[in-house]
Image (tube, rainbow, N blue to C red; front, side):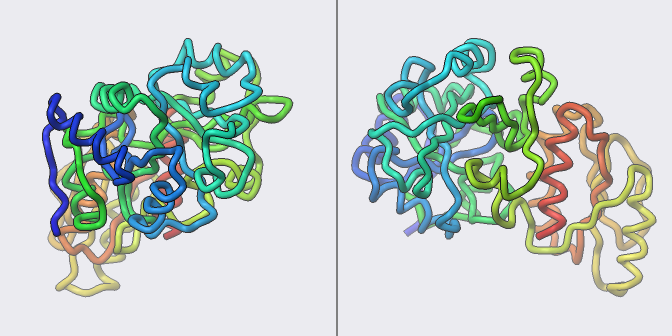
Length: 330
């Protein structure tokens, strides 16, 4: 049966709350990407997320709460730094890794004693959390490994018939997942780059360490251990300004019947035959918001490969390049 897509008005929120309380799965918008929500206190509901997404069972989930006052409902030994960061960045795209409390089953964190938690900034997500009056576990609402969903249509394309309900709140403004910061150790440790930059965290906390290896970060952070963000076709990265040259070389390899997708930052001249161009916004905030939708659009045009020009790894650009490298590795 097809999954219904409904408006997030009062009746829609009430229907979504009833679905969650019955152990069902509800996709809803956040400011980063669409999330696939379940009651974080229900072991059975949490397990159904992994089934619907075909998500690897060693990949922990993020728990969403309505405000910082609920931190102590889901975590224990919450440090003062967590509340200081919450005052500055919540609601917003910062996820904190804390000690998991007894109310949250081990399945959420895949057996770890830690918990990833945040307060989303999207009004629909907040309305849902407030009406549900409890924590919602919610990874991105896509098949595992696919480009993250920034529109309700992306969720439906990946999960139609696998979940109970989709709240359509329009496009996700930020377009890439939250920053993940570990506060369990002796010093704050940046596990995953996202919309809240390392520079912004350093302004709030002083020096912030960065995980030096994938294994170190992936133990506690969602979204790092496995293949992520990849469309069904090959993704190749090219230096800024060299994308067309790389795309033409791939076109020649594939033959005249195959199109090559090309994603560049800012305006560009019309490409030659065999290359399908998508110009993304020059501002990195706009670029991030359009990134996953552009990958999905080009994939839907049946291109043989997608060439993406790199962006500077400064501020938000570091998070964008992290996603692009993972898509290319896939």
